[in-house]
Amino acid sequence: MTFRRVMRLLGLLAGLAAGLTAAIVALFARRMIAPTRQPLWCTPDEMGLPFENVNFPARDSVRLSGWFIPAARAEGGNATVILLHGWAWNRLGDAADDLLANFSGTTPVELLRLAHALHYEGYHVLMFDLRNHGESAAHPPVTFGQSEADDLLGALAYLSARPDVDPARLAAIGFSMGANAILYALPQTDALCAAIAVQPSTAAVFAEGYADDLLGPAAGVVRPLVEATYAAVTGVPLGALQPAFAVAGADSMRPTPVLFVQSKADRWGSLADAAQLAAATPGGEGPLYVDGDHHYQGYQYLIENPRVAVTFLEQYL
Image (tube, rainbow, N blue to C red; front, side, top):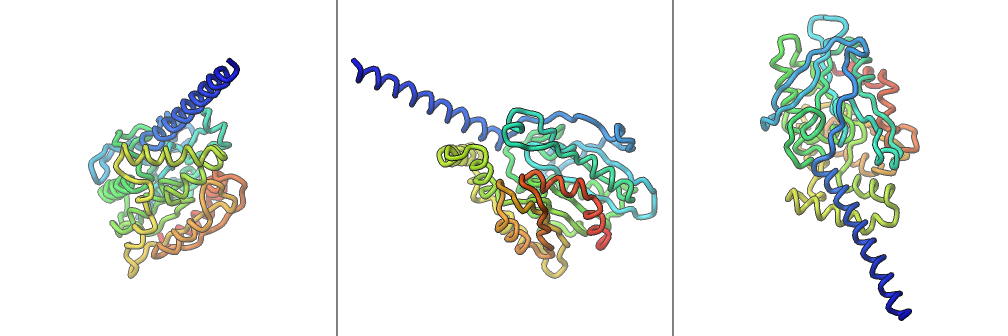
């Protein structure tokens, strides 16, 4: 009798563990393939910025939505900076107000603050939602920069056609997946004069660090299942997403200067991976290693120190 009760209890516990594991795998796989969209929580006019609602196609025709913020000082040939947000964010950044954000220790990322600084430094700014995010069209799966590079290429084509934009003075600042998109796009365009890549990472490296930090020992079970699910649904193994291989094909005779920014205490990424990406990039500079005890502090650095971005861009624009 006792033996049967023990076996029933063990069976119940095993079932609960399997069910919990399946739920966690489904949650993270869904978030990787097509994350829940964050609604826009404000507009530029709430910070006193003039703006224009814009829509334009990505290179592969996916509809993209965003804002064009003209420079505070209308001068001949103002340079334009494109802001590219991270995974599961939107054009404004990351509100960091859901349960997972609270669990992971993320903090709000306010890209509009950076846009505000650039605006008053004399730059036009284009902020837009990458595919599968914000108000842009759905076109899953998320590929952590590979297909999102088509969004950046579409943005460059759109800006080059505007009469108020100098197509010879275009730059981009990307965060996380947005930084990866820059690296994937560089071999496909010579339109960028300069770029800043804030904590780009190889997808598999990020997935390992992210899972280990959030799930601890359980990551060894959950992460392979999540990666297998992602590959089965998308047809793209996570290990096949290699921004270092892609960016190495950029023009080394006329390299685009790219400043890399990386948190020193990044549990979700890898300093070695950041260094490899910078080394693989023709024109790569840095990484500029910044202090912080969380991955998100690497993002916050440039927002809190916009002069770093402006000083770098002034050299090439």
